[in-house]
Image (cartoon, rainbow, N blue to C red):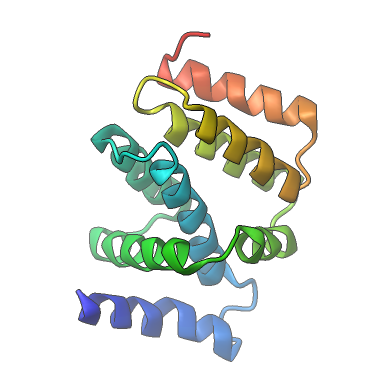
Length: 156
């Protein structure tokens, strides 16, 4: 597992730090994945449907293969565990993403939260907090939540 993390770092994170990845795409992947993992862990139990939602989101959004996905998840879980808050992740996202991309991240977070068939109060609180830190307006926040409800089939 450590070898996988080192390989992911050398292939994806180190190039961003050296300037080989001018958009910071790899660091953005870790930040996004860490927020998704944090949402998955928010209700104190990790449901397989939530984990599958995180994996599907990362695969869809970043086009990573299985080895890259596994390494990214391990790295994101470690980053989320060690983080003292969400500011380090949201700051990177704010620097790298436009408004539409941030709304898409919020929608993906909603999808993870709803993947297990219910919304926990802690998940809702985290969503409000992250949306605020990402400067996502209320109308976009609500629309993202509705799209996620429709995609997951979660009733009001």
